[in-house]
Image 1 (cartoon, rainbow, N blue to C red):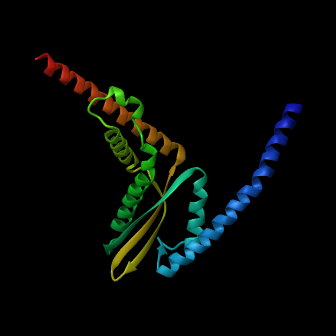
Image 2 (image 1 turned 180 degrees about the vertical axis):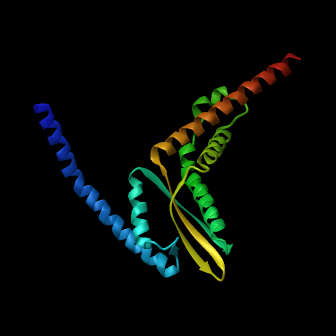
Image 3 (image 1 turned 60 degrees about the vertical axis):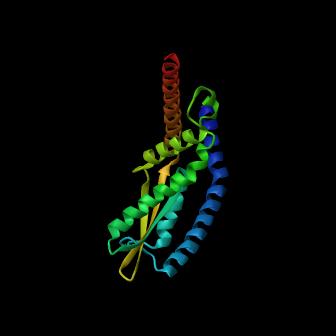
Length: 199
């Protein structure tokens, strides 16, 4: 019985102590959503379908940040087709997400450099980034879209996100695959070198 009371007390204390942090974060998010919505509306952006306000969608989007990494993509001046504008904005979000993650791959392969003839650290970094780019394709979820029409041309902003754990898994896989590829290239290089020198 004492154990149950201790557990209940610990859970209650954790809830009480975390409430001010969550409340402060929520206030900050509300303030940012209100400010951003005002700017977007002034620029002529409208939500897809218009069921809710931009501020509402932004608040929902910011709330995703606890468990997800957020990224936006844009498309501009697409000839009157919202679907194409949305697809281009999603592609741009994926490209932007990869760009934001390039620093993660710096120095990849440095620990195995001595074993890999013919592959440089830059080759391995570029391979890891390429592998990550391929892995991200189709993995971003869309929270909501904004559209703006100017002279028959459609522009779009895609508000996307990806689960933090999934993103970390994809980054690690990209590094492992790039390093494995570089090691195979190194082994092939050594094999060719032995063959040439044996002749």
